Image (cartoon, rainbow, N blue to C red; front, side, top):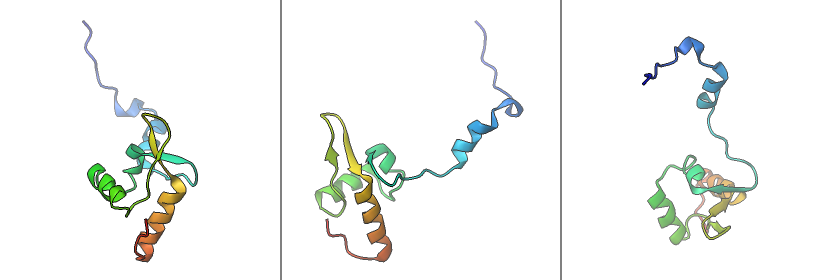
Length: 90
């Protein structure tokens, strides 16, 4: 059985490296699911849902039986409110 040998770094495609160096972007419109959303938030899954229940974070939209997402516009507005120091109004 052949063994896997690591590819020398000199042979790695440089464009593959670029995606790791670029910070993630939050789109301007549309929907974002929890796993992608948590990249932009300074708290965990548990805290996210605790804040949703407490109405201190925008409510998600149930897109289908198994898909829940947030409107990006709501998330951007929430982030902007946090930067201004205004209390969140649910």
